[in-house]
Image (cartoon, rainbow, N blue to C red; front, side, top):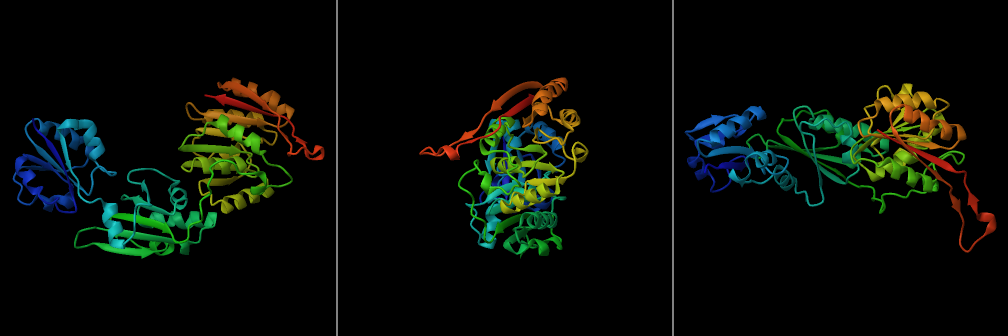
Length: 402
């Protein structure tokens, strides 16, 4: 039975694997790895565009063994996953050192504590926030998402959330293993002004990372800057987040965000979630900005303005929280329901009776399935002290599911 040999290159073939080519009647390789084929006498095809290449691989495999050359370890953000899906038991894999291994060795940088992000062929407007929440990240780039573009994103997001660019070190390894290999170190401002080979990998670390909190949920009211006691109470916040059933990725709109307490907890629970805190009051906008910086919550974007007009330019949400409507509940719910992604959820917290009475019907008319829960929060110390017992007004949580 014919076999497909998937050969990782570094940039040459793995030691002792050149003889495998003599058993193949066709080879698929990117242009930069063509020299690794040496005097191979069979048919040679490009690996891209991938759909056409995969179809040709299947055809050639019917006639005999074939080889596919790829850089580094094909099972690490490489073509290996796709070939396993398509060719399964006919596939034999011989990896080389991965690009992260080689790059970290060049920079003498341990990588067992690093996180990995691939921007290759991915649209990710939230990449800078994802990177800056980690002490060390290794990033796979592509033709559009270059080291300079990444640096610019880090520069802008770092300034917004209070991380000095001098605290961010970027290390770029270009053309590893080739005569043109180049290693570059610098802060984002320096890297943003430079140009790099398209074949590169980026290592980003914070020189003095902020210690991570040892809990994901449970910020107390006094730990969040707010005004005049206007903040979603801890117990209600926890219940609200439960009803939102936050996805790991996607978009959350926090409308009438106030101090941004729901956004802050959501950002800590789901770091890859893109969050838009919409608020029209200048005092609350200042609170949100201060809270974003204090918790370095780069995945939160403050949107200054009045809903629903302020929602026009925002990406489509999977979840929407309405904490305040400024007297425009019907307009906000109608706009939100129309914008909501399939299987999305809208949660409305009703503090006043008119919201409690109107929101369920408005959500129902918009085609959502409704459930309401009313929470009465009381707090008391122990041992009991009568004068320190606090009874808060009931809050109704209205959940609409698409």
